Length: 197
Image (cartoon, rainbow, N blue to C red):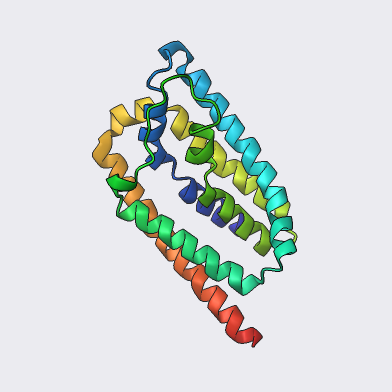
């Protein structure tokens, strides 16, 4: 149960649904209001399919490359650290926020907003570390996607209720938690490398 909760929390933090709220709203700005919720639901479903496919293919990819556990932990910790720093100290210059002139399909909402490189990389790391616990991990992925999808489906209402300042504060708090998780992953990788020498 602990592994399920920790994996689901990590995936949820990396998905960063609160940070994606303004991106989803900008991407659906040109979509008629009556179709907006349908489009969001469709894109979230496509993102889930992509994440589940990568869930099974990603581990095989790492095995083929002969990547060791310590290297994966250190690399994963560094990736998560960069993501966390961007969440805590967002930069407007590197924003991927874009308005789509027509109805979006797959890009940019499903990929890269929801099923972005950081989420897919985290999946691969967790699968490689799971040691046969992939059903629990798959359930954690589903749970993280479900909670994130509810938040993004209600993006317009949440932005009106919470406001930009509250959303930014919550996202930065999530980034701080992710900093701690990434630091632990780095330490685990370094410890495994030293113990294996």
